Length: 114
Image (cartoon, rainbow, N blue to C red; front, top):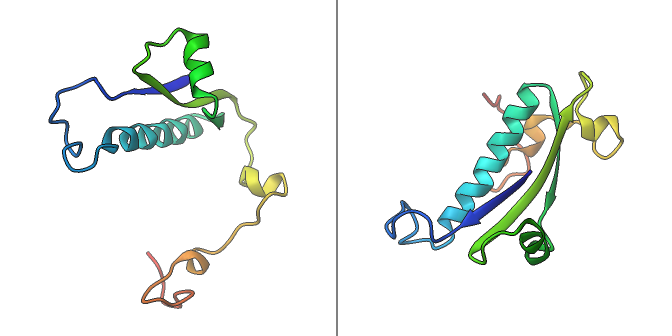
């Protein structure tokens, strides 16, 4: 699947575009994230790849010149695992939420985080 963005769609006054020209593109990125989360909830594994060769991809798929490929994605049934994929494959280890939360310039928050 290829997710794309067409800045010419919608009215000129699309929410956010008047102040931030790339607001529509940001919305596409958020939609991709939601798509991946939904796929994961349905036990589908998702592999994403940025469209680094976007002009090539657009030509390959016959997209109009104004349409910009943003990301490609493939999904398939996922083996059920209780461990996150990044940890299972040795790429990252699980970190505590408190290690990632920063407040008031501190390197970690000792208070409980909801």
